[in-house]
Image (cartoon, rainbow, N blue to C red; front, side, top):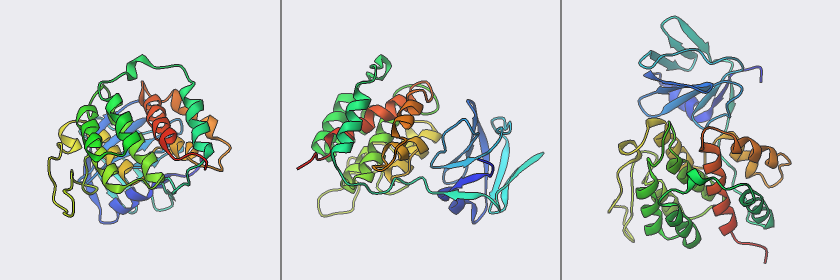
Length: 275
């Protein structure tokens, strides 16, 4: 990569101009809290993110609390800037895919990887049951139990929910179920819809109330089918690099990538098989 690349949701956020502050970061990334989202500045060793600006070189040091301004022409802060007017726009949305044997084969490949004890979270069994039944109440319960569960900028519970929601979106699973899993009625709210209504009932707290701002952002994007780059390769039925994507996810973060793999495999295994 020789040019700056920017996710299309960030392009949309930049159109009107926005001011925010750095949340700090680490591991080759810095996170910026903007009014309506979190923007991830990532370097070449970090996978492109659905809310990201991917840089071809090192990520600048932006200590927590640093004021930033995002506009169509660039990202600026006191003492520095990143030009965006020539940036390449990328789409982090997983295209709609057709179920088939390839999904089951990839799920089996993932499930054959060594088990990760730290992913034995309370709520994982509820998530499995929600996926297998497509029950909205179980999806809501999984969201209640898993959101914010674990440590780090993106707790393991959130990673499981995001991967399951994004994979389900690619398979065109029912939108109310996906919104329940991420406890969203829209990109900015929580939901449980009563039959025949659009009212919110018995909704768990919105993600921001229970987890980090970055993780809440990734849950919102996942509900719309936008995921980290290796997931797009994993879910490409014609892709030849899906094993490379599995390998990359397996070592991503303390547990983030492995949580994504585990939840994606649950959804893939539950998809319809060959006739």
